[in-house]
Every structure is written in structure tokens, then in C-alpha cells.
Length: 170
Image (cartoon, rainbow, N blue to C red; front, side):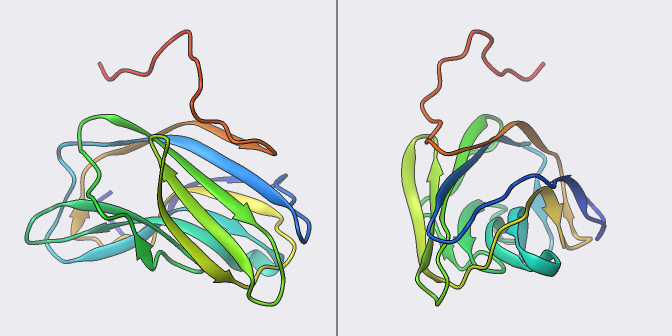
């Protein structure tokens, strides 16, 4: 981070029809060097529909005075945040459960390290077509390292997973 450019990976084969539940998950590492000189809220994962409209989003909020990082969920951007901050210097498993329903009755539930931490219940979803993973619309005054790994999209919840080769940072 450190500029206003998007740093993303787009997966174009995520299709979720109306009344269907799907699970998106990935690992997130927040470096000890993540800081902000101005408060900043930005998306790190978007479920997008027609014309790339954001239907459900996971994002981070960094408070400049403390450099604490919070994770949240929302429609276009995160509006409901976890009660606790996210630890820096370690990997976290992030999972978004999207229930696609039209008419403002869709839900997005955010899980962090196997615990449900935030839910939004008023999503107006259309057919979902793709997922976008990475930093989007960060302030130039937000700097540091975010790493993403093991993105998955499934019809079943992933966490907890058994892994033969655990994640570590060299």
C-alpha cells in the first residue's frame, strides 16, 4: 500500500444465482508496518454483479491515531465491523458467507479465524458474476504490507481446514 492504485486479482467465474448461499475464503496477513496518517476504510474483497456493481464487500478500517486495524462487511463498502481489532504480524482466515436474495433480504456474514464477527442483513443482490481480491481505494497515506493467500470459493464452509503445510512468514 502507499498509493491510491488498486492491487487486485479478479476471478471471473464466480456465479451465484438468486436464493443461493456461497462461501468465499482467503488468508490475510497484516504486516506490523501497516499504518495510516489519516483514517482509512477500504475493501479487500468484493463480490460483484452486473456491470461490476459491488454486491457484498469485506474491508478494513485503520484508525490513524492508534493504527489499529478492524475488519468489517457491508454492501458497497464495510459498514458493520467486528468488535475486536485484527492482530498484526500473523495470518488470519477470512470467510464471507453470501446469501444472494433480491429485494433487500440478502445477507453477508463475516467469519475471522473460525468465529462469526459481523453480519449485514439488508443486501440487495443481483446475480453475482465475479470476485475481486486485494486492496481497493486505499488512501495514499495508508502504508504497509497486506498479503493474501489460498483464495477459495465453495458451496460449503471451509474453516477449519486441515493443512499439511501451515502458512508462515519468513
